[in-house]
Length: 429
Image (cartoon, rainbow, N blue to C red; front, side):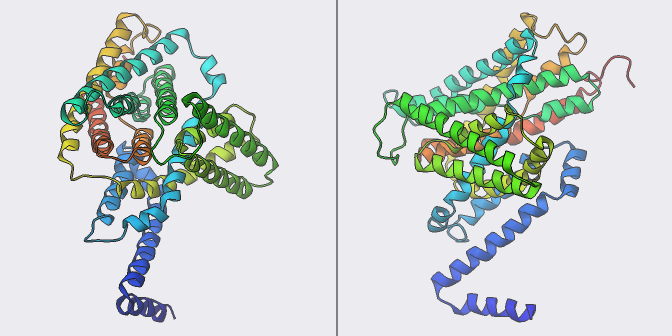
């Protein structure tokens, strides 16, 4: 019976009209993609990534991103503009999922336990790259693309700065594997958490002060849109919290989380604000209120993270304009500006003694902070900016950020292999 069904589908695909055949091929292609996403989320694949020491952005995420770009080619015709319009909610849910996961990492109780030196170090390593990358890429955009009188120059430069200041936790994981103390590893992780906060805050300000042309017809001042974004996230976060407390099993809790992310991301899309910001606030609310079965809730989020994120990358890849040569020119400029900015920030921090509470471990921690790669939130933010502000300049960011994520991921592994002996505590073998 299965062979008969498959044969009937193939005959229908070849004998039906062009539109029907395209629809069928799209459905079958997306079903195959869904199967690949869950296969990439298999524990065996995750164990292989941990063994190799690479993140999901490189191991599984990049192939899905490239597949999305290929599927959008006219010669392939799987993700046409009409199909992408129908898959818009999937992209919003993926953006929202990245946002809620980032918000769950921001526990105010944990931040209150940070030492003053860690807070100052986080501020320096976050703020300096934001300013330097924003100014450098803004200048390049002005020379190549946007006149100085155009408000898009400020918007795109600020967006580049927000993406450039973010970092993935890969460096912290490598430090932990090298045998360094828990305090040193925690410092690198804390800096990454503050990076996420600044990136999301900048995205919230951009969507409020630079309203998309296809925005909802409300007439509100920019500060009003900012309150709408944050208030919507706060309200939906409280609703999610109450629903999670009423859930009687793990399966109900998972359903509540999925529904909450879908509702929050959809509401943000309706009002033309950022799904990342709205869902980040939802995650922040959940992180700072006493959740029932908190361990089970976080475990459920972890299980669902990879397939949702990979599907998001597939749809996001279809928006990638890899044929724009200027994006490939901006890629090395973005990588160099980000690397030099982090190097300057860390040197300033060491000069000010902000790493003095880590005696004997300043060098490996400094190396980790400088070479920390670009993470999933960076890619999500730049894709969100492209969905809010479609145009020629914004797709250039996608090429620069995705290429930069690959380069920075390779760099951090190279540095930690070359200087592996420096990253180990003295006296270790």
